[in-house]
Image (cartoon, rainbow, N blue to C red; front, side, top):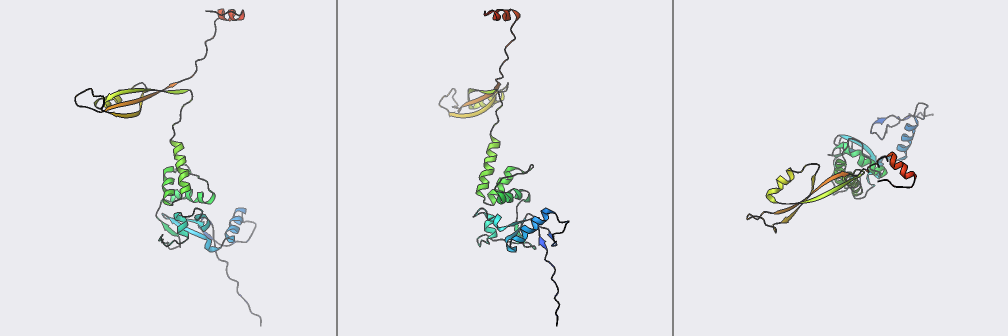
Length: 238
């Protein structure tokens, strides 16, 4: 007796953007990108994928990515560290109460090892998140970026001239208020009260002020007709 079997419906596939879609054959209307994404997803076991809910936004990634830096918060999370209690939402995503805007630079760094911060995102915010997730290598990268950003940019053909002003504590406010013509305070040094000019024994300060001057070279003046004639004969004019 022949028996008939019913074919089971194909299970939905979860794409990397977190939205479920039905399985499709390699039809002509299937784009190359979709084929590559589907093949990559099918190549990984289901338990390799991890969903994380960051402040209400769900991200889909892999355990391999989250465990890229051992000992980090995310690595311990996907390894079910008993010392790191975790809660999941109704969709099985780990709940983390952080700002979702700053998570993409964190996740992309774990994916390919490069620090990429979109315009509109503050480096300080990325640093805060990197420290929260205990990603020491990323913390170093962001700090280096902030240090370079904070370094003063010196103009070409300019130099700074410094002066040192000596004043007492009672004269300090007036001294700073009377700085004009581009002079500004660069450093304030408290030298104590060893130089006492009054009976109230006020503290003494050295105020280091600076001013930038352009060093644009002056173009030589055009020689006169008389000077040109003398130069042609090998002579120098006055």
